[in-house]
Length: 195
Length: 216
Image (cartoon, rainbow over the protein chains, first blue to last red):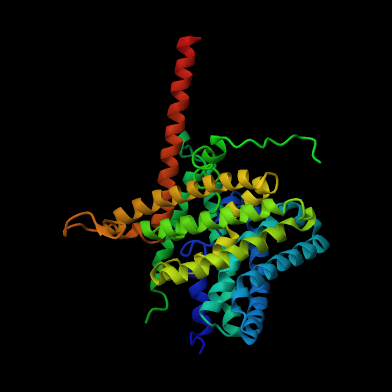
């Protein structure tokens, strides 16, 4: 049982070819919501990747336990509880270490709980039957991919603020079309890793 | 308890607001991930919409029944556990009904848990209203969500594979516009729909303004 994919392959697959945001549509809410400015996009990306890492490790051990006791139907409920606790942990750490950053992120911190990229990561690593190191690589790749997508989007949108646009296209529609173009560009990575 | 008197009446608007004025996808921009991910064919869109509607209605009912028992400090956690329970039920139901649909939707059925529409409804409506009213409201929201998914699914399936609900529409020579069923198509079609609605809104405002000038 298990998967035989190499660790580097898993990392780059999650990072570029199957980017969580642009190819698998996970974590779109922060992607569209927080990507207005570069200086909020970076801490948000870092916080999300950290939660991804913590919850991925927890989910791995939790799944072992669930399989041992034969209660897989509780998987979803236990994963979401673990993620909520991980977010709480990040919140408390940030509050202690950097109160300014904590205030800057504000409402977006608790919202990480309902970011589907995190639950999606935990579920996918279970479906693919990754072992511990593979799960770790998957979480790191997905986190890096999330930061990359957020950064690209924030950079583009900062430029767009200076551009003259027809009034109809302002707002969400334009962000979505931008996302579509970015996603088209990322399709170019799809050949990566194919033998 | 609260000073503001709650309006318990159920009007047509309770149901309709989710479909048009507060459509979760086109107006409130909630729950975007499943909207883009599973709408590559009309069937998938319909299945996803119905599953979400089921979870919306049942979790609204339960949250509304227990609204006076849940302490406000742990309400979000409680809502999530309630929602996760119903999502697990839906997951098993779909698996029993159709393995094809189950495989096509994949992890996105389980990801209904983190769909902000459901948590948003639990927080904004079900926790403050009587069970029947919250269920009617949830049904409207669910229907609005399903319609929005269908809007995307139909366009993407017609353009991307030249068929509708699996039935071929055009002749043999039709060259499918493959990019529409791939990830970028989701972004572009939703962007297109939003542009369309924005255009309708501006036109309506302009005609209202013009009327105001002639009558004033």
